[in-house]
Structure formats: structure tokens, C-alpha cells
Image (cartoon, rainbow, N blue to C red; front, side):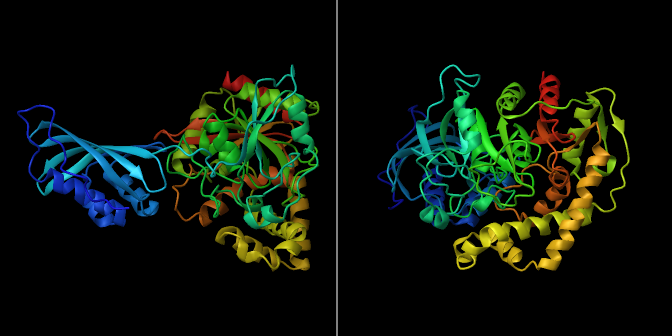
Length: 512
């Protein structure tokens, strides 16, 4: 569809202010560059200032550098043509241009641009773009209902809505696991996963089935086939995986409870990246019947909410009673030091607000070996449960997950046995170190990376922190904090096995 102007840009609303020379030409140069994905021309036509603005439904970009980086990673804009243009000239060097667009795929949108005449010609100093909203955002949801499954009347969760990670069985649906190939071959489920059943019986209605990274083997939320679910608290940054769809659904207000899983951090990471409350439960505290496994030694049920009270209320439905214990908080400087300076400062600020917190150095010289053993044993188990199906289908996976499963297929029995021995020793040691107290550490070492950023190092750095609760089989609750630049991060509370309800009560009291 052509970007050719349908006619001259109409004149200004005031009769004494004609359209300035060069403005129309600059406008159409910008439009042609947009359709051609000519980022060099777009860079030139956007004001090189820290105050330049570009906004859309995803969020606001501030400054030429942010806008340029977004444009280079975004790719071609949707094909469209301009059907109306209107100009308001404020003075000979400034004008507002509003254009109505008609998209090739259907529907109409608008773009509003504030233009200023500079030394080298006209440039955009602020822009806002709107496009027709999709009927279903397939980055977030695979299936949506109104509701998909109604909750029982009168239960403690009546009125709440549930986004179910696409690993749990929902009667009448298939489990897609974030993989089109798996979804195409999956049978229709006859019943609900046990945890889904309990939540529905308690009154929560299933809003829909939310996207996951393929087979939950990721921490990023960047599904190769369906795209990255949006992160409304940190626009243009990843949502965090693998419970990415559930997290975004809650963050956007599509659902109040995001049901997910946590094997290596898949609740804690998206909760931190999106400013949510989240819990990874004690290993085996909640039945995993009807849950598609990744690595059974580490897989746990978890969920996310926008407030701590609802997080705890879900726990009252799903969790057994806690054995009780101390709420004494302990901070390990070596673990805090694994976070980036902005996240470390945000966690330190939270710690400072809590009053008496014990700082204690732990012997963590084996932490890197523990992380490697965690990853090796996780890979071995992942290949045992999925390898038979994937062996001839690795090419159906996105590059990141394909690489992990390919590496998993190469783990030998001897390497797996050695890793399992380290994991067993680490589990005992982590439980001993945590003891009867509550460990405080960052939920993730950094804020959410930008979409398109290399995530390999981020994953390894993240696992160094998140593997501790996984190795120990321990409950962990993530509470939201904010960095000095306004980005979400997380404080993680980890306690002894079975103390899930204690942690939820503590989180609710600290949030209040």
C-alpha cells in the first residue's frame, strides 16, 4: 500500500499562519523512510535531544538515543497509507501535524507529530502513534474466554480472574507449552490440573491460557514464535520468563492472579521485571498433577498478583499450614554484590526501611559450582522428559531454547550423576545456612533487559541468585521495589521448607 500523499497537507487553522516552507517535504520524507525501514533517514528527521519524545500503546521513549535504539530493533512499520493530514502552525518554526492512517491489514490509526525547524531543516521533537488494538494479543494469550472457566460461587477467591500458564491442563483445551509443534500434536485435556481445579473451586474464574516460553526452558519471556509479551511497567523491555504471559496479563489488569511455575526463577524473574508480587512454593508442597514437567527435581507451582494480600489469599487456598519460625531477616553481602548497582541500591533501600537486619557473610565459594550443577541436572532431566519427542523436532524450536535442549541432549550419564551429587550436597548446605531465618536477596540481579539485547550473560547472572531456592527446594517470595531511574526490581525473601504461609504473611505485613 502506497505512502503517497492523497493531496496537499491542509493549511493552518489560523489564516495568518501559512504552512512553513519545507515542512510538507519533511513530513513525507519521514513517512517514506518509515515504510522503507530507513533508520538513517528516520534518525536524521528526529531531533537529537534528550527531551525528544515518542509514545505508543507500549509506553513512552524519552530522548533521541532511546528512540533510535527502538527503531533499529523494531523492524519495518506496518504497511499503511495516509488518508488525512492536518496542520496547526504555532509559529514559523513550529507546527503540529496530525495524520490519519489506514493500515493494510485493516483498521485506522493516527500519528501526531510536533515538528520544529532546526539548523539542518525540520525535525520531529515529539510523536504519538496509535493503531487499532488487536482483538487478542497473541503475545500474552493463547486462548481467552469471558470467562474460559467460571469460578464456583461464594468461594474465598470469588470475583478474581486467573491467567493459567500454558503448561497446566484445562479441561477441553490442549497444553501448548509455547511450542506450535507440540500444540498441534497435543491431545485435548479431559480434566483440569489439580491446582487449577482448587482455584476454580475457590471461586477464581479462568480468564484464559497465557503464553509461556517454549517448554518453560527460559527466563526471558521472548518466545520465538509468538513474540515478547509486553512489560507495561518497563516498556520496550522483556517481560521475564517463562511465566511471561501470566505476568503480563496480571500487570496489564487482564487477570488478577497469574498462575505459573518456577524451576529456575520463572516466577521471581517476571515478578521482579514487572513490579509484581510472586511466590515460588516449597518443592512438592502443591501437587503438580496435570502440569507439563520441565525438570521434576526443581519444578514448583507459583503465582503472581498486584498486591500482597491477594498473593497470601491464594496461598490459603493452595498451601498446607506452615511449621512456623522466625521472621528474623538476614542479608548476605556476597549475594547482594551479585546485583547491578541500581538493583543493589534499591534492595539496600528496602533493607534500610526494615530496621534490624542481620548482615552475615556466608561461605559461598562453591556457588558457581552449584549453579553449574543446577543447570546440568536441570538439562539432564529436561532431556529425559522431553528428549524422545524433541530428538527429531529440534528444528521446530526457537534458537535460544533449541540451543538449550541440544546441549541437554549431550549431557552424559556420568556428568548427570556428578551434578546430582553436587545438587544434593548444595540442598543440604543451603537449608542449613537459611535455617530458621528469612534470607533477603535480589529476586533478579538486574532490571529487565531491553528487547533485542543479548540475554546469555543475563541468564547466567540470574541463575547464580535464583538457583539457591531451587537447590534448597525452598519457598521464595518476590516483593516489588523501584530503582532510582524508576524501573521495577524485586526483593526476594527465602525461608526454610514448608514456611510458605509464613513468608506470605510476612510479605503482606511488610507491604502494608
